Amino acid sequence: MPALVLLGAQWGDEGKGKATDLLGGSVDYVVRYQGGNNAGHTVVVGDQKYALHLLPSGILSPGCTPVIGNGVVVDPSVLLSELSGLNERGVDTSKLLLSGNAHIITPYNVTVDKVTERFLGKRKIGTTGRGIGPTYADKINRVGIRVQDLYDESILTQKVEAALDVKNQILTKLYNRRAIAVDQVVEELLGYADKLAPYVADTVLVLNQALEEDKVVLFEGGQGTLLDIDHGTYPFVTSSNPTAGGACTGAGVGPTKISRVIGILKAYTTRVGAGPFPTELFDEDGEALRRIGGERGVTTGRDRRCGWFDAVIARYATRVNGLTDFFLTKLDVLTGWEQIPVCVAYEIDGRRVEELPYSQTDFHHAKPVYEMLPGWSEDISKAKSFADLPKNAQSYVKALEEMSGAPISAIGVGPGRDETIEINSFL
Image (cartoon, rainbow, N blue to C red; front, side, top):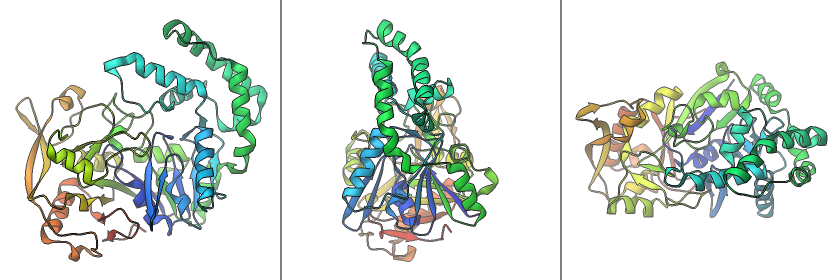
């Protein structure tokens, strides 16, 4: 049962799309198991760049079946638009499978998300405003709309009515917004039914049967470990579980079927949105990392906050996810620095702390304790093996591996599909 989980080991945007795409030619299924179109992957194939938001990266690999699992929240208009854009570029999207149990992001979820974030003012979370959080809230409150509901107009109408009974009270009385009409929402959602029908499937059954047949299944997380609703920097997190446990619930497979868990680490650290970030840089180095690394959100278009590598959160990710391997990305971005700081611990109220504090207050006040590592100036983008890297780059990778608690099995030395050094096979 060769099932692999691939996830972000920081705050997201680590380069999961590149890693998934690298494995795509060797796997039979690639599964998104949580999140929605608040996630984004950039995949470079030859001279073509693809920005994916909701679709699994495996959709770009011929022979691979991409799956949107039950743990994902789906905006039908975004999904159909993304499929149309890929079809226009000659990408075959016909093999996509969409779980009938995945929840739908409705127009009122998007409205609630935007007005709530504006209402919070300086206390805002930094959401993407795409309705993700309210959709997950509806799911937990048992007033959510699932893909399968699009095929029963009576049930769909009842569920929309139930959801809007409360939401219209909030919109009109708290936010001074106009009430949303039930029939208008139902009509819009029903309009997606026929277009989505070719993709809808019992994905839990399909994936478990695939594993029983020794097919290779890759579970692809969106966002990152530190954005997990349970294990991240709450409340500045996403509304789902990007950690490894989320793959089981979000795709419907048991934990005993997972064989490897691969964490994606950027050679430095970035974050989008509000929340604590101990190694964040506000100087020329931070701006250089942002510029050289092209650090702008694929989905949001927002500049990413940039900082040095944080070994404390890497160790935390290893523990929480049970990581067996790391894929280190964007090592090439660090070329040119004489010395590279690495955060090895935090100072909190005069105490040295080497593990992630569970207290939000402590983490908010954490100051990085740096160890300086020698840099390199040589171009590493053409390196094909670990031995091709400059000695100082090799030492940097080895130091990060030792600090993080799991072997680094692959290294990204450029944005292209072929600009990767594979040290140990993931399969």
